[in-house]
Length: 415
Image (cartoon, rainbow, N blue to C red; front, side):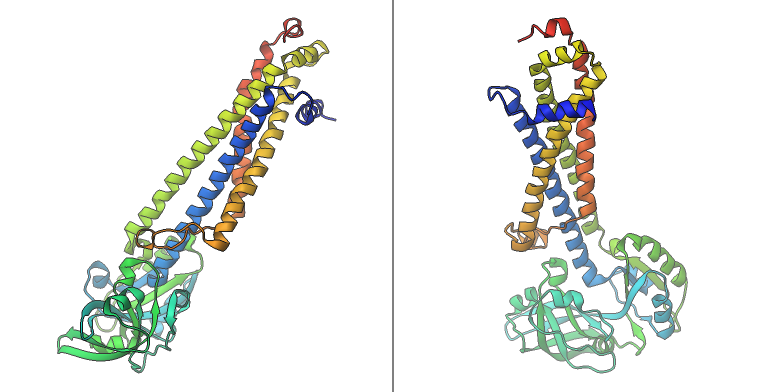
């Protein structure tokens, strides 16, 4: 059997003298490791959950990649682009692309007897993926959207409904301005959604693709563009570059020039803000590992000083400094291991509790979510455990050399 491991196990499991100074030091060291790991697990899970939740909400409104008229991508004006079967097939066949859907935008005014509100009407067709809107519906239903007829149905946000004091089933007038003058439509509100993303909830309403096209006065195969969803967000830039190469300098039959843009390029402020969270996580990880390292170093030094007589006896019996250092490093492994176990129980327990109960609340007007989102990544948690163990053992190597300065003759008289 490994001699240092055997001695370390005996020291760790010894429950004799309750007056030992090292016992509270070991408890403090164990607690320091446990709290440090728990905080790291909670920080990583919360940041991952927050980033992915906000990212998915932004993507839910705008997809991963937009193919539209080059002028429309560079300005706030709407310019039509041809999205016929050939272009749709080209986008569909791009490797890594999961889904492609057409859309058309028309700005207008919703008016009631008492109030009015400027909105952005987004026309979508039968291929529109309603998963995101379904997940955020709070009232009513999503109608079947058409690209060949106008059903005069509309889905609005809770923010718009509250401002105009409207409910599902009610009818509302909408006014649109184009080259022919003012055009009026009367829509029936079939559904109300809420995502807590203010910049979208304040303005976006959903209706038929055919309705938006007619209001813009465009040809049947002209739209604001196509929204593309990719299979893996991590490959977004690579897929976007492929699509850009396919549509670059391509002109449709009406004279419009194709261009493309990723969701990150469309919303740089939100994604920059999400990226800043990574820096906060790294700072927290560094601080918590430092706390765990300092407490375990203090505990080990106290144990070594308290076991000075034992170290002297081991040296007198022929043990070398290396064996004794390994003994105390193994003892540290036992202490850190218990701390890691407690830290996992504490950290994952809080994360699981938050996931199922949502006890930690947030202000949706500032954070875009009502509760703290969490996401458990087993690989990252395992990595955190291994990194904490390795770093803590590494920082103990230097203090363990204190054993080399203990002389058998003097230490055996030490009390």
